[in-house]
Image 1 (cartoon, one colour):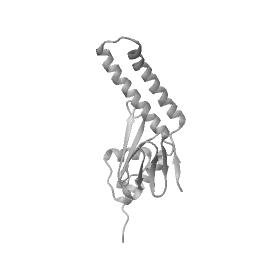
Image 2: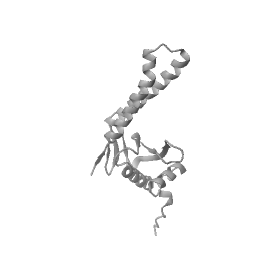
Image 3: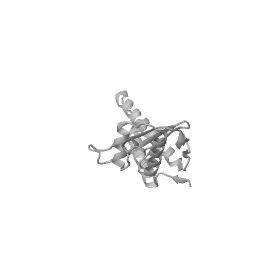
Image 4: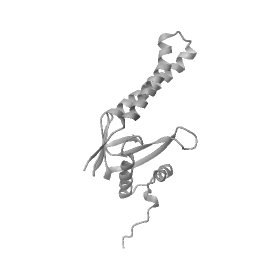
Length: 169
């Protein structure tokens, strides 16, 4: 049975608000005021970063992540399909917004023959995707990085490296 996952509207709305605020603080002074090149350069660079953030937020809004028994599907801009039996790497990174890991988000990168899919922990059903990916990692005999193992443990998911070996006898 396929499960369709999406980013919650309140998360996307917050990201859009941050992008608009950032663009207003950086692009508006460039458009409305005469600023020296020493000020214009950094403002333009920051405006570009906020524009990229807005585009990334729009891409997340338009993407539907569908998970079924055979694969993970990212349907939308920059979409891809990764079959579980072709998963070749799983990377799980944590990005802190404050010192000490009190607040932040995780980003998972799944790589397979069908391409690369990046999802973040704001996605409804993120933990279920990671649990299914870990099962594929184990079935495919893959090794995970220490960072990914630590982040799986932080999610409460036991990495394959820490599970007891199955006896073939």
